[in-house]
Length: 163
Image (tube, rainbow, N blue to C red):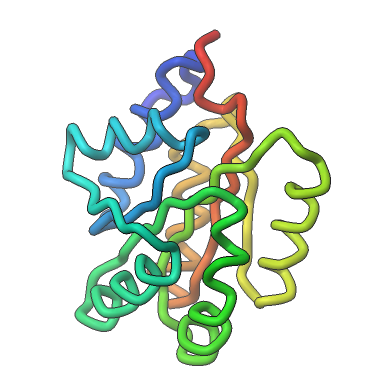
């Protein structure tokens, strides 16, 4: 895929890269930051909107155990809502899945989200729209699909903004 994309096309390009890397199915809770990615996924492969983050983690765990490579989209506050599901199910049983977490512009919440994921033992990377998205997705794919561990992609609030 293209090395660099315009800001307005980042969500569509990320969608294409996730699909090309064989991620799926997709589950998510509403998140303003991730709305463009939700729309892109809905138009390409579909996304199941789930009311609560811990439910999305549970459904994704089942699809992972069935041999798929699920993706859960949520806002950063959602990580706090599903700490028990992650710490009691995903991490100890090394259930591979990708969490795509929409960040807010609040620096404290961003810092806490990163710290919480680190303390849970989940590798995370922040999406950088200025870098090739395929490379970023490949790094996450290595963790999730080859090492069979959960990982998180943190999406800053301006990542999908029109340029």
